[in-house]
Image (cartoon, rainbow over all chains, first blue to last red; front, side, top):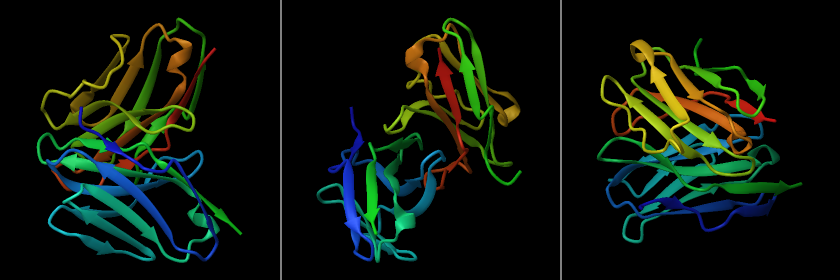
Length: 112
Length: 114
């Protein structure tokens, strides 16, 4: 079936560097995408979202890029900090059914 | 409260017993989701409620799992005759519904079957 997946299960970066977390999706009917951050022992928390009619959206230190041609989503974190260490999930909502489907997650480890 | 509330936060049960997990969504949210997360893994979809529509139960792993949502608000996930492989964190999320609204998660219930 169609699914959302990730290229890298673990990403280790140096504090202060930029991080890029990638996600590939296969459901071309999806029109809304969300990145969630999950810290240990907590539920996922919303970071940033993007609609399918956009290719880039910026937040505070975070940017989401959407490439519909290759069905690829990425999360860029600028000047990564120790507090950014967590598991990051991409999720999608299709334009049919409005159900939220998650990818497998990437663990980001920030080295001081 | 302001957020999604789940109870209990931790539950230890003996194999073969039934358990009920509760989710109080954000007031006014019409959409409610249940997910299961095993240690170090991703989120496995279980069930989705949207308003008065029939729930999407396609993610329930067996007929031992069931969920209800009473009055369009509180939801209960029931696991009958628990097995050790049911041990996981069960997460609930709610949203305003519609195709482009953010889902807010509770802290989860950690279920351990011994």
